[in-house]
Image (cartoon, rainbow, N blue to C red):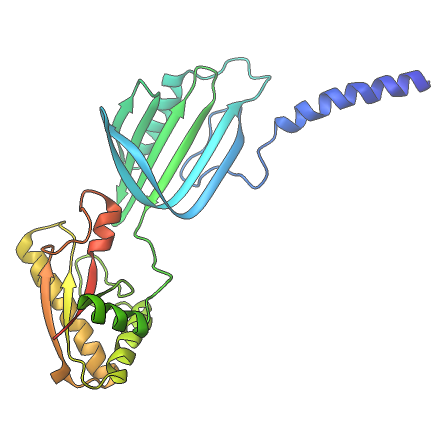
Length: 277
């Protein structure tokens, strides 16, 4: 009897770990956009509120996309009789994205990776599918979005920049795409500009709006002027700064601080600057 119990214990010690491996990795689940290939199990996953990923868009060509990031890796169950081929996996995700109104951007056969894009209204989702002949595959999904700036420079930093360089960049003022209405989350930055001006009665400023290079020059110059005007009005009406101390100007895309060839560069170029008069 004791011998039988020991034998059972040995068998369980061999079988149970294999069974555990047939379950999804802890705290992992399918992305809401997609189901999984039949007989697949999640091997691992990662989610970040903001990240950047380079998607293949052509031969020897990639595009960096920023936003909410997901990565999910799958492997076929050990008892799966027929494992999916690479092309079968690609076609399944192609069809799923096309049904949602998306399209295939590029199939990189050398890397065995495919890039898909789905655009609905203002929402843009980029998907990379990779696959192996073993039936393993994975997804990288980025819901494109600009980063929410959590750290806003304060009045002391603005003052220091004005003294050393003559201008100070402000990245905590937000607008919807193509619009000049200041969003409520911009109040922290506006308040710090007001504190700067109240702390130095002799300081007069140009408030200069800047854009990236997306769109026409004339439209961007006008947009940047309207945004600069909106900042001046917020300082005057909400914080009591005399209008005579402020002048607005729209520079459009004409004074970038980074290349507009990347999403990161475009985000840095969309800004308001304070310039000492």
